[in-house]
Length: 92
Image 1 (cartoon, rainbow, N blue to C red):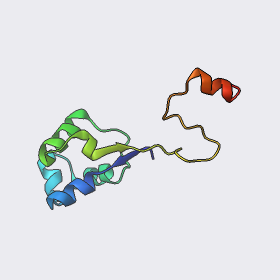
Image 2 (image 1 turned 135 degrees about the horizontal axis):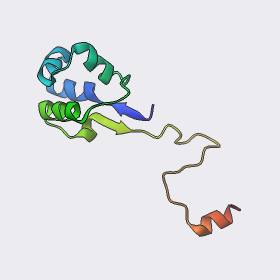
Image 3 (image 1 turned 90 degrees about the horizontal axis):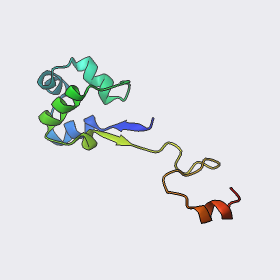
């Protein structure tokens, strides 16, 4: 998974239960669990806004992008720009 959900970390920092959090943002505890466990396919901006408001945090505190291919042999590292001299040296 390229997007890591950190809701559990923010809840733990605030010693807030999933039930209380769900009630305060207007979701069912089951739907919060889907979000928390990274099984959601999408998140509405209104839901993200409510989560940030209740937790007093930024969206980046709840969601993190992680490069699945980092360090995998044979997969090019696309995180750094490649200049023309590097391409020529590599025969591209």
